[in-house]
Length: 213
Ligand code: B1M
Image 1: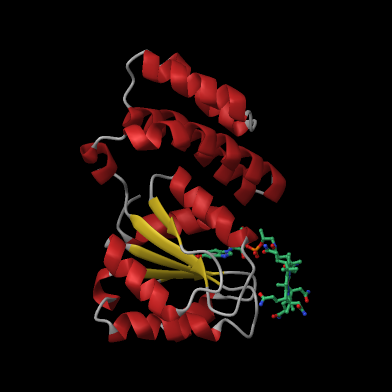
Image 2: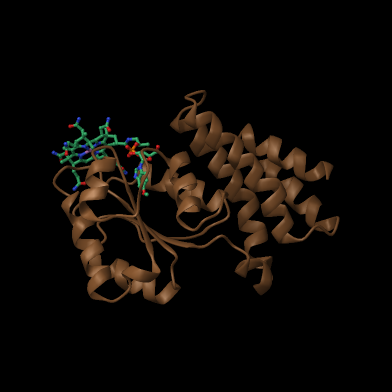
């Protein structure tokens, strides 16, 4: 459908007003909120993810595109039927771990996951392990995404995984970790299920962990 292609193109160039207009037009044409997300907003965000991964664009362009995505998403999200909401890929509880206030990278990961079709519960920064545990229970999360930018706070990722285990939730939730000082070998050491060096890869990893191509 033409309007959805135009919406994806407007998102890629970060034109939030145009995305908003086209979202309203698509709704007026009778396109369902779920299809607007799946065939307009997500494909646009997927292009941004690929370009970011190839270093063809940088953080500012991703943030501008994400703002355009939010312009459309904020209109259609409240209109999603229960069935459409249930068709989401999964629910991710994301946060920057206790003691750490860096949130730019975490916000990018949250936006990319939302743009890829996940429900994202953003717990913010300086999030203690108990808050992750509570949120996983409350939202029946499929994934937890932990961000840390300080070498001194990386250890809290391990504590968070332990808290999930102690709460009996470890079997039902996939834990992903990331942030500048985090590595695959650290992720393996602390028993995380996945590691992503950047926000686009975080989407790939989140999907792989639940067997979605
Ligand atoms: Co801070 N800071 N900072 N800082 N800061 C760093 C991280 C540092 C490397 C700077 C340096 O010394 N060169 C250093 C850490 C050193 C270390 O631990 N080895 C540092 C320090 C020391 C500090 C303070 C202690 C400084 C002080 O007060 N003495 C203090 C700590 C405060 C605290 O957290 N308790 C502090 C404070 C701050 C500001 C508040 C001023 C500000 C944060 C603002 C904010 O986030 N709202 C800040 C900033 C901006 C930085 C730098 C300059 C930039 C970080 C950033 O936003 N990068 C940073 C130096 C640097 O990295 N060059 C630095 C851009 C962002 C897009 O990248 O966050 O890596 P990044 O996210 C990427 C990936 O890592 C990945 O995807 C993202 C997108 O591709 N990713 C994930 C991130 N999270 C993920 C989660 C996932 C998956 C992937 O889940 C699955």
